[in-house]
Length: 133
Figure (cartoon, helix red, strand yellow):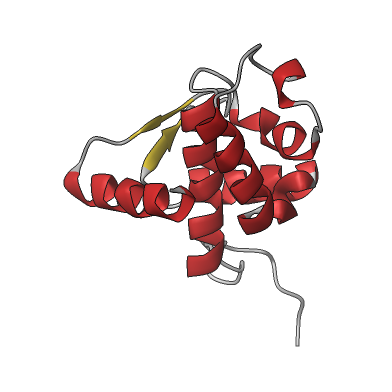
């Protein structure tokens, strides 16, 4: 038998990006936290935000009690994202999901994000908010 020539028929298909339900929820929790604490910041700051002991030094000079509570709760819920490589990997996979699965839009350069305005994503955002409140 001969070797494969690498034609389109024999090349393996690339799997589309996927996340488990837990991973999807964790990424969206991270984005929700960022939207609440630093809405104009890049998603890339999340690991630093989760690991710093003085969050006021990271992004903003004054934090409310509610924001500090959100940050502390996030450290428990999505502490795995203190590892920048894991956060970047999960964020990249999230950005490559089919749009109908995402509650957030993420820019091509991954520097900006925003909440989607469609009904299902508003329901998911409400659920995320309840996890922090």
